[in-house]
Length: 385
Image (spheres, rainbow, N blue to C red):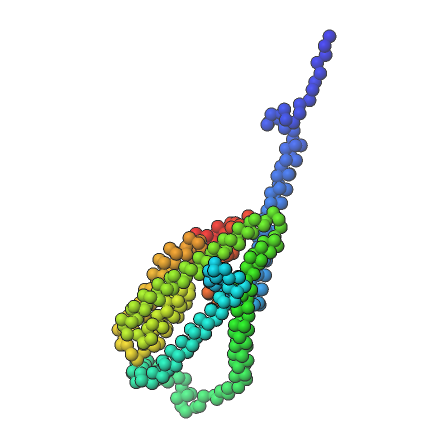
């Protein structure tokens, strides 16, 4: 007679509703622990990003001179790279091509400085001829100032009207020495920057391939391909940024040249290019671009033509920032206006005027890095369009 054996069911043979209570409890505990672990990991990652960003900004603020010199040298190296590549095509060694490119840049800088200095001397020499006209234009402002002083005297306290003299104020001379030391420090920084930039640019151009290869090798083997691709995207972005700004500035300079020449702006062939390229600076560009043509036109142009000069600069700036910039650079930078504005605020606060110039390429490079790092990809998406 056969006997029936009772075989216990395995966990896989149980139906969903038939799992033992202990296993359900253990599964719930494991799920809770996993959720807590994921939350802790996310909080730790966010804290690391915040601390890292803060440390980077502090370093940028403290090492302003070094970093600005380095970044300006990188920007100039990208500008001169086509010249060096052209010299390589004619069978010149890269080191020789880099040296010639740096010499050409220094010669062009000296020539532009000499031309600007001569134009400034000519303008200063011609300025007394227009002094009467300038005084006439400023007389209205002076009259308004005098009326404001009279109004202020009428609202002075009663004790001053009765003949009581105001308390004398003593001005200390200690501030003068502080201003002198600050000016000497600023001059020393400029001289130090100007000395190092040509050498940095030369070595960046002559050792470009070595620097790129060794930079990639700093990363672990599994991340080197990603680092190489990211560096390539940064290089393309910088080339596009430089060529796009040069094209837009040239277009605005030519338009300004035509209009300024028609209106009779003194030294229009020189002022037009200064105004055209100054207008490329975000936010402050419109003010800086208006100053040169208006300054040289005081005393020579009437009020109507001065307004036409200012209106021309304003229209060109709006067209460049709202039409040309998005068309020429928008596809390569891929930054939304909010990210650009925040970056201009941060880098302008840290580095001043140079921060406004370098803010956009720095932010675009940071976005490329975020796009190629999985943990930072949401931040790159936030900065994108």
